[in-house]
Amino acid sequence: MAPRPFAAETLLAAQPHAARHLLGAVLVHRTSEGTTSGIIVETEAYCESDPASHTFGGSTPRNQIMFGRAGHAYVYFTYGIHWCFNVVTGPEGRGEAALIRALQPLTGLALMARRRGVALPGGSSAQLIRLAPEDRAVQRALTALCSGPAKLTQAMGLDGRVYGTWLLTRRGTPRLRAPERPVPATRIVATPRIGIRKATAKPWRFHLAENPYVSRP
DNA sequence: CAGATGATGTTCT
DNA sequence: GAACATCATCTGC
Image (cartoon, rainbow, N blue to C red; front, top):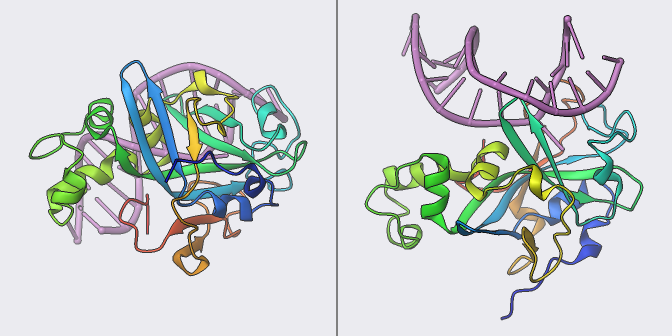
């Protein structure tokens, strides 16, 4: 089957549903160092009426792209150190996005490990995923690559340079690929969002059930 | 294991 | 000046 770009319509649904639609999709990024990709296994929804959202106070230079068309990248710098990557969602003008919080590494594992400063035990082959997923040390190293919003941007080489990128094309980078098959609703877990001080009760964090690559169960 | 802490710079009040 | 959609590393059970 040919890889398909992500369907824009699924990102137009009102929050928090758009963030659910991203689970199972594949994020791909090609740089001069090589190509990395991973399956989206954890997201969080943010929207304009949400006190925890960057768009709560209206449009600013930083959050401007969140008001743009669903399918653009919103990237921000935080805590003086970290980059976080979002997919703009919702209808144009609405100030919504989904934070990508964790990936299941798919390709470019050696490059991810190098960028993250993680040692892959027993070599650096992508075969590790199939050969030794039951090995504790291997699983721990693989999980350390992308199990958090700032870990995955470091592993994928994503930063402020990709702010505003259109993600829904076959050739661009970074880009989104549609899920191999739709994720059944019964396989999605909703919990309160992580690391915020406001609106902590909204259950707008979503992750794949039983997936070892999420930032937190 | 849980909980505390420092790193570090941009953004907005 | 405070807050920050975080992480690695440290302490003490």
